Image 1 (cartoon, helix red, strand yellow):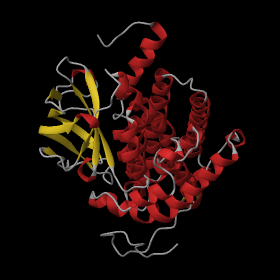
Image 2 (image 1 turned 180 degrees about the vertical axis):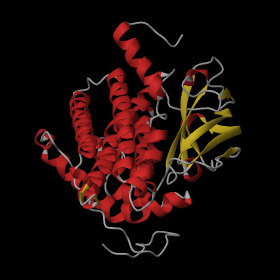
Image 3 (image 1 turned 60 degrees about the horizontal axis):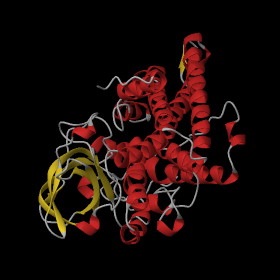
Length: 407
């Protein structure tokens, strides 16, 4: 693999590390996938090896987003892969979307976030809820990476309870006046547009597209993160922003709009977390066969084998869970509660595997010579965003009991 910079702005001139990752499929689940799913997965895996692995540790160490990757993500079809081609998507199915997210997160959770926010939280709501004029104006440029988008729902005081939002719009003739703030917004400092959710004068949640050059709109970056360091995160601040009514989604009202977008994104996370887990397992397996202690490879010791056996077991269970979820999604039958179960299970699974992998790698596990500590830090955030671990537990609880524990 070339040690060159490949044009990455600000990258350190350093010999690129070899990406020796191999996929792991203990139950032959590939046989359940179609050829186009495998082709998409392999193409993205190759791109990650060439474009992400050689630079990602350095970008994470500097807490800098490799924003030049947006264009490459567009070229490999990672933006809205299951949306129609005529609207900037890839024209594939939900299974293809899943395997693409898996391979991107194998590279880095932040890179997967770059893609899943663009596709699931920006392109998807514009496609599903937008006017034809909005679709034609924004989606092709988003799909080609000419526009970068972000999704404004979470607020400083309203995370797990988004319906309590205070961001609001007031009628002003042919426009609305938007005021408020959003917090923890992936891509916001570099975004050209934001899909924003706010309450109208009747207290009903409405969605709209806000463009970065609208007066009174700013997106300051959030600094000091120990997690998702290669992903850019910021705020959205609205001070009397005049949003034309033609930018407001015409039909959708209430929380159904933003929550359906979150289901789309959570589905991708359920797949993506498997990628991070597989990378940790793959590195651990290889390290256990190469690292010698007491005259033999550490993979020959019972406790190491226990860790590895439990890792591949949990990965296999997660693979089966997402395959079935993908099948349901393709049939239009996947429920938000089913998606919540998969997101919660798979992210927690990946985090536990990352922790065990850190132990297998010993002291080397905390260095950037291996991907484990970066995945471990990233997954601490993935466990929380798009619905926390505990909130998803309560969603499952409400689904099986019919009783609402949120109120």
